[in-house]
Length: 145
Image 1 (cartoon, one colour):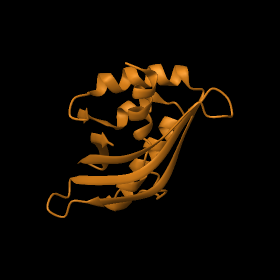
Image 2: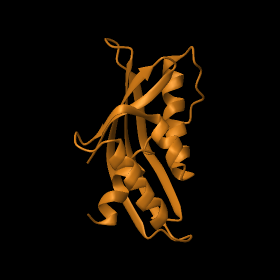
Image 3: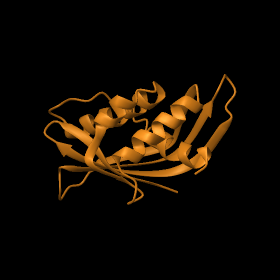
Image 4: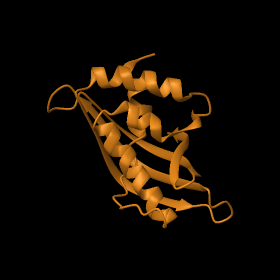
């Protein structure tokens, strides 16, 4: 598997920069804060923190699991000194019928670099599904085009 193929899913975790502060008593704000924390953790190359945000039943593209995410991050964080995510448009919402499920979608530009100049840059359409456990939102499903 090429590094370019592996770079995309990892960086997509950070796809949604909603920039909101979370509050435990406000599920929407907590969802937005979880998305922002995910973006911060990926750009900070904190793979353990990213893994803590993944649901135990996490799946990317209906096939890849948490172990795949761990291996992908290890490879990419070693390959790219700098990781940046630019959200070109984003939205998130809580399912009105099932308030323990939240969704986020965005158009994103992602880049990885050894120095100041990116050596990998791509555009994606990203869809994330979050499941609420207590006061925390966990990333359960990830898909991209």
